[in-house]
Length: 126
Image 1 (cartoon, rainbow, N blue to C red):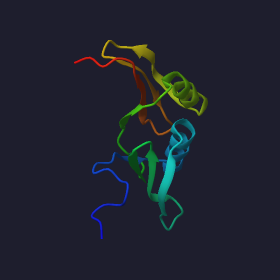
Image 2: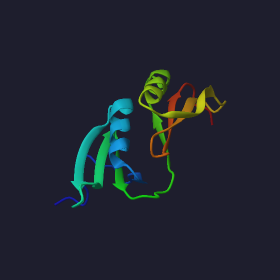
Image 3: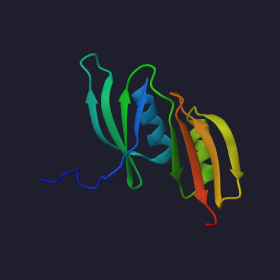
């Protein structure tokens, strides 16, 4: 028996949102997230769900009044992902920009207010 699921990292972001299905749909559409687990409550809402973006598992639970969260995601084509996030119903909180730290990034808030920082490393600087 393993102490964690096969293929999972030791640390996973856990989002508490009012509409977990909206978060799952957003992550799947924008980041090609793979759905892993889905557990419903008796009333049909989502009790717990998990999805994978590249090498990272993100967990999500549903509760009204959940805290606002920020997630930073590296992608191979930040402009394409940013445009897709907007087309999927996201709202820009910061346009794509080069901030001088070697990353090209912008922020998009999804329907639950989670801000997804879409980034592409162009040049690493210490």
